[in-house]
Image (cartoon, rainbow, N blue to C red; front, side):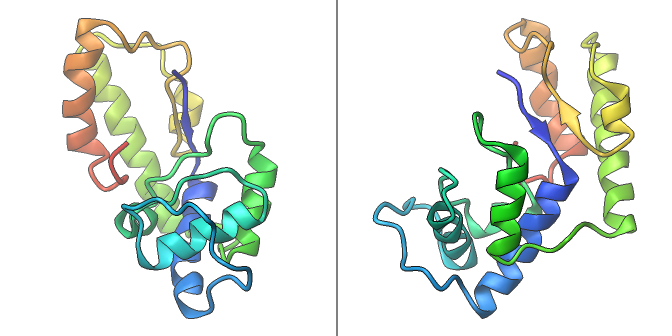
Length: 159
């Protein structure tokens, strides 16, 4: 299982919560909203589906914290274009990018202390994390990952 957290996508989602709560999307709601979603996040998710992106509604907390991922099989550019059309901002502030960079570097250092290596340091320098190529099924990973996420990525919305 591989996934990447991208600050631009997270920033798009954060702005979507604000704009969607003010204006929403002009299209009707989806036929199958996710029960756990509510408020701005449900509106954002509905707008994304109306734009052709197959995505479940996040919770408002996930949307507000930026704890979202591009679903596997979804083109990043298409996702970002749809999110921008659903009220997403153009990008994150320098301060937010710096925060993400510190958090990702902290997580990777924490994992390294537990013997889990192989993370792409260049991504961490940009505030992103990719688990591609990391064996997530080892006992060491399963023990270290939750603790390192809690310590360094606790505000990322339940990765």
